[in-house]
Image (cartoon, rainbow, N blue to C red; front, side, top):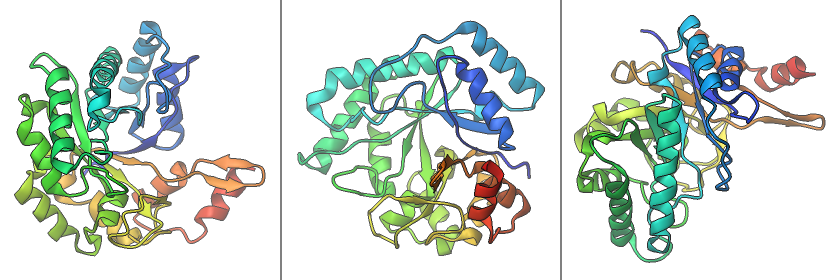
Length: 297
């Protein structure tokens, strides 16, 4: 099978999508994920058509299929909070338009937190925002991310995700982003990958998975903590993650690493080139951290 693997990369004002492509190639990737602006605020730079065109040409040259490239919506959108309805609709529409302008077809979106109003009302609010934003002409699919269940997060179970999808009019525009750290922390045991995927298939349908976030977890099963760990250094484990990455049911789905940078006294270093190399070889590198530090010295 052809492995579709990449990581989160930067998107800056000077090179925009072209810079994202160049960074991803440096990691040995054939896909990637980006934010079109800072995830914590609404400040956005205009999409540069020339840089976008150059990026598309480079992707074609390097055999990166743009259909596998992902945009991640900013964290400040909380679809479940009714007080933010007008903002959620206007800002999500803007993010969808920016994603369309980049020629990217999938956007990962956190469902939101109900902030004390209750699960059912929170789900209803998410549905209302999605119905206000999505039409049959929308060129971007929204991938609802599975969540760890921290605080009042919605999306910690497959049933909650299904309930949202069931309420959306344009169901074909809604997919799922399966996050390995999040489902582990939510209580899905990835020692039994086949069982978890069969459960997902029975509840939502395996074809609804548009992207998989590959992350190990710093915490135990059903901890509801949501703290990512580097591949093979956490409680999910290298072999379980390899079983997901190479699972036949997910062979056509892009896999994106969101693992933490390695912290040193001299700075923070991205682990992706080394983690992707391990994944391609299907062999854990016991010297992962020291190799990363040595490379960037």
